[in-house]
Image 1 (tube, one colour):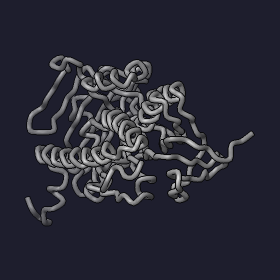
Image 2 (image 1 turned 90 degrees about the vertical axis):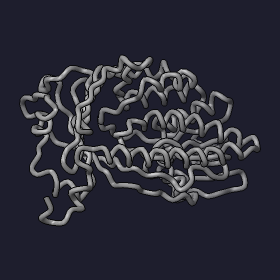
Image 3 (image 1 turned 90 degrees about the horizontal axis):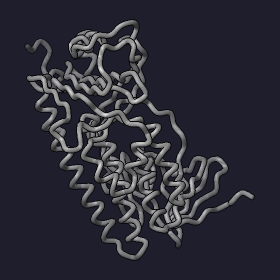
Image 4 (image 1 turned 120 degrees about the horizontal axis):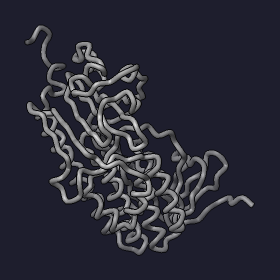
Length: 358
């Protein structure tokens, strides 16, 4: 018999990394949790997780789940972002050079962990436009036959759309409109060792080459729309790889690309009355920061603790979560500005010059 309405303590909307971490934390603590999310196609972007994040995952009881996703150890990091080339093997860090992550495998494992903890996985699509407050908390309807849900509290893990938080009055503050064009390069056509990460500054854009855990490489170009065409001066993927010192064969450099939103954005406030936003819904970071996954793990766990306190009648942790988010977003914005200022060719500098300028 199909359930017409599901009653839970917490509804987590979005089953990516941050949503699964929040649902697992709450379910392990004994709360009745529903986790809603659809399978979406994953684009391999060479996402990384810093080795120093290991203690966080161990504390959350998710380190073994992470290892089961078969991440690839970063063996060498190269960068020519500034006027000199920089290389690192990760030997100077107690936790190594970090990991290249198979996001699809990781999310699959985290969803399984949430189920084992007792979270109820709701298949189907919820309609954020139907979200409303009711005496018991919140009510939201399904768009495709799944049960409607009543929850005492909500966690928005909907990613960059922040669909739930915006429905509850938060504003999405967009800081830049960086986009990425990603292409996958076959391993047998790239003369580079597994475990490589390379950041390369270009004219009007920057490039990122990374090994993929399942084999092969990802080459991505990051740029702001409208600027790239005026500044690239005909630079091609093959030419950029040559500048990186990486030889490619076959049609590797001409492979088709997929475009993704990579801009920075934050919420005006990341929590409210028995709700909180996590991961990209709360703060979407520039991929150059290499902090998105770490933030997903940290914010998912922290928001779960704040929501639990709110359910027990203490709203102070949710208020502190919002303040923490504001401080983190401000620090991130300042650091990003400083990093881009050190770039060999600042992304917007040429666009602002008058025509005919040297």
